[in-house]
Length: 169
Image 1: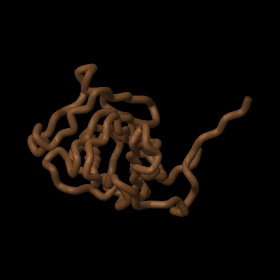
Image 2: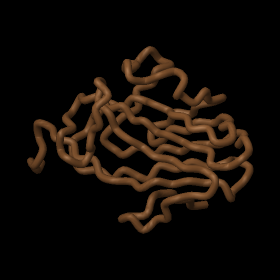
Image 3: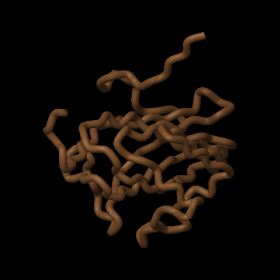
């Protein structure tokens, strides 16, 4: 059996959604917005990824999931292992109290319930570990047991400079 997964090259995937809305932003420790494509990222930098999910339906969505594929070049700082920093701009009342969070090498998934009309955030830390130009996959949210409820926001590009940027081996 051969199985392959991935994200389409370019931006030819469908964005928007039905019943859910999702967006993603990148911030520095002080809360200022960061554009990962502008080349300001350097090896060792810490980036806070803020994903916002909104339930646009009139009913609670139980066990909605949010899949966050992260680009190569960064590693998730697992706060459960004592790694990571909590910035002052993260407010508890805005955070999604998830039932379960699954952190993997290439993605993060959050599972829980979103009340009708509720908007919640998940903030996590990524440390920049590899220089280069990387594709950021789109961010997605969906209801596990109702495939008609979904949301997807565009991906992008991350440019990380390092001491050997532009040099060939």
